Image 1 (cartoon, rainbow, N blue to C red):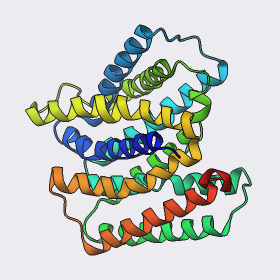
Image 2 (image 1 turned 120 degrees about the vertical axis):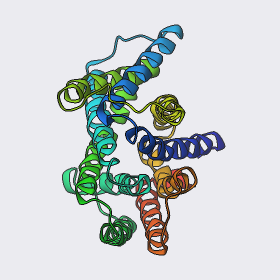
Image 3 (image 1 turned 135 degrees about the vertical axis):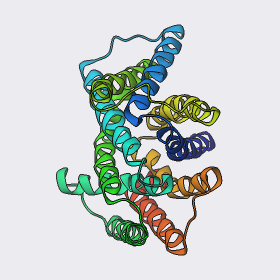
Length: 293
């Protein structure tokens, strides 16, 4: 893996993890699904405009269109929608830790549904990662984190797992910014009627912190991180790109602590390290030997 790929991976991991803290600020001031649908609309239109200015085309293959729809529904509407709602009741660091187990679930899904061989290092990584999750969940839930919020985060990360399995299909064939923009518009369109049905979209407590968090979430985790992720997957493949997810527990907890003042207990720290080690072990076991040399 070259230095440019490493830099892209580090940038993606930080941007992706920082979204939980900014989302926590947004949902404290605005209806979550309405805010998220608007964010997708703005991000999607910006991506389409930039893509069109660069000469990219919306003439996608049928496989790309399927990938766009599945990715837009699973990652944007389901994963992020459920997480935005959940973060009205759970902390940003808690949501980030739950979401960070996605690479473990991808490996588990490959073993169960795709009959991939479970290597000893993979099995050890899965065991370590799930042990870390149980450790953190036990201490956090007994310490007051909301059970319903936790359940929403779990369903969300399952949807994110499904989205991750479609990334390469959606991003193959070029027109990357158009694809990024379209999958965001799919998420916006899916969330808008739900938001109108169950929320009061104009019930917003306006503040500078809300505007800053919305702008940051729209442009950085929403647009830039998604673009970098697609580029990274196209450059080094989904398996090696997902290795950078082992940094998400660290970055997610650190950003929440600095930006929101969320406290992290000793068992949280131990659990984060164990989860990160498990994710790294799982991903390294899935990288071909020649690619590690």
